[in-house]
Length: 68
Ligand SMILES: [Cu+2]
Image 1: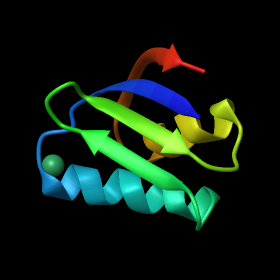
Image 2: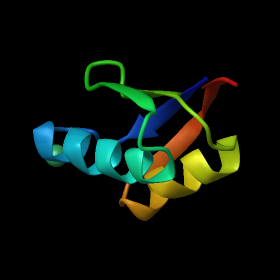
Image 3: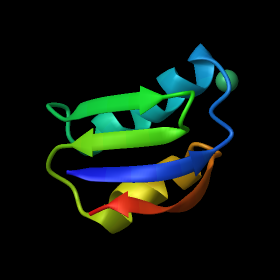
Image 4: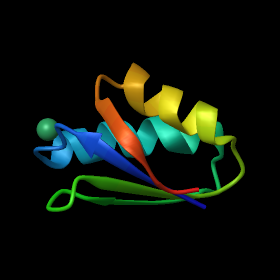
């Protein structure tokens, strides 16, 4: 499970875009995105590197990893 601090999650579109990118890594992954704290919680089968890359490729800046 990873919790990642992301920059620029401003609306539902952002949430959907990141959720879709992360469920492409693992269709059974549990993805929770909080717009207020700008965090993405990923509970699934993927490496931290791939989770970070998927978020970046969706167009969002990864500030850091809060919990690995
Ligand atoms: Cu948005």
